[in-house]
Length: 283
Length: 56
Image (tube, rainbow over all chains, first blue to last red; front, side, top):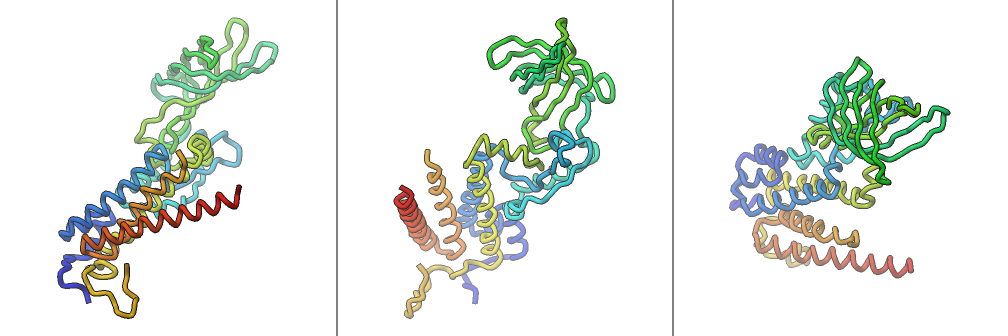
């Protein structure tokens, strides 16, 4: 029999509020201390995981690259297959903080969210490689960073310039003219992939510019990503990415208990009952 | 910074939330959570010590 000191109000509403925001159900019931404990502990664990994982541990789907036809799922002009992220089944119990992943999943699946040539002016910081081919067919690769400007020329091409430097400090100025493709606008990677053709210079050396430009935060946060991006996160953060994921999973699991407490009260009772004399009392 | 350092805030969070779902009285919640927190850390330290000993 529930302790008469406990006033749970409408238990269903409390449970729903507790699901949407950890602790909110308890605030609705007037159990402010417990609401504060749940809100602070669960949200700080979840947000701590997000910070530790550079905003990447929460996602609802993994996008599959189409069997090697495209270098990455970002550049697939169609609608690639996806598979559910099992961890998300637990993260979702954190409620509203994990729900942007569902919105991003919907945005990612829309037909107009596809890899394509730029349809408006691009003027962004670029980081990547120049794959150069000389007039006699010799190939070289150089890591570069700088400013990329692209203007649409047609349905599959663009023209523009790249001004930057290589990792050795060499000044690099390139003319872009030809086929160009940008990765899909909504994708779970902070870098949006770019592929464009470098026009041959006076010495006959042309090639390709391959790399990334920044993707807006609301286009990558909690959006579905591919295994290439997950590999990159593991390479960058190593164990910290796994720990970040664990933090967000545990936040979800803790909120399951908090929701249950909002719905049905404390599991062992108010806390001031006398311990059982047969030694089965709780500590 | 050793990776195990992340176990401290995580254990604290788990202890507080778990014990808060067991009781309603604040003093009981915090005393249970403190005990559970110490037990988790001591247990993990013992296991860490054993693993370090057997892998050396």
